[in-house]
Figure 1 (tube, rainbow, N blue to C red):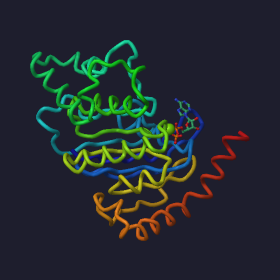
Figure 2: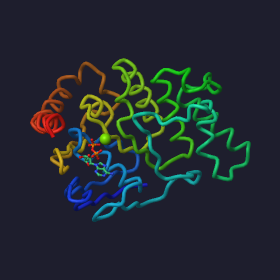
Figure 3: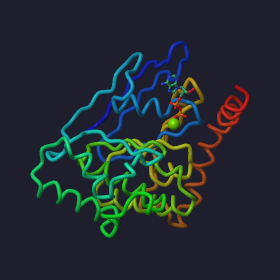
Figure 4: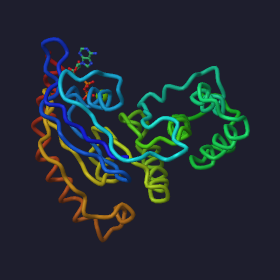
Length: 257
Ligand SMILES: Nc1ncnc2c1ncn2[C@@H]1O[C@H](COP(=O)(O)OP(=O)(O)O)[C@@H](O)[C@H]1O
Ligand SMILES: [Mg+2]
């Protein structure tokens, strides 16, 4: 399934948050959206996922989703959003509750996502017994269990320490190499975008506009190769030069109102 986003403007009351946001997401690609705090990234993801009604414009879908897809769009949140009183398995089962799947099918789906996210041994653990990294694996497993057409990821690795983030990014990349998951991945971490994205949408500070869309020339499986470091650093510098001033201003706005 492809996504076609066209939001001429979004505002909350008199506060204009998004301006002229237009891009597509093609099935099988990861599109990362980067931009300073407060530029409207979460709002944009909320509009894509149907949580926020856009003031103008629309998000269209085209093409077919997987025949087993129960929900075309699912979210992965920064704070994991797990239910603390349910085990890992039951947190995942929770999102299947309202779908009338035969018990065997439901259990097979849960086993499958646990295996794909490296959680098989933790099925009966409770969230408080898990590290942040493992909790976010549950967040990802829970999103994947409905076989979504598109994953909507709002800073999914931002709450994790640097090493855990690396590990989860690697795992997510490996999953992508096997399954070609389609995702819109929001981050303020440029390195994360450069590691994961097929394309990077760079936004300005609020009202968020698209400054530029970068297409990554280096294939994802070569992004950690030393031979590609110079090329990737050039992309990093180019994007950083676009967002540096914006980030400084956004930071001052946040600090001084
Ligand atoms: N529900 C809302 N009502 C009013 N203002 C909001 C609401 N949600 C977000 N905002 C404001 O819109 C701007 C963009 O917010 P957000 O989309 O969360 O940005 P980002 O995710 O890029 O940090 C911010 O100034 C924020 O305070
Ligand atoms: Mg946000």
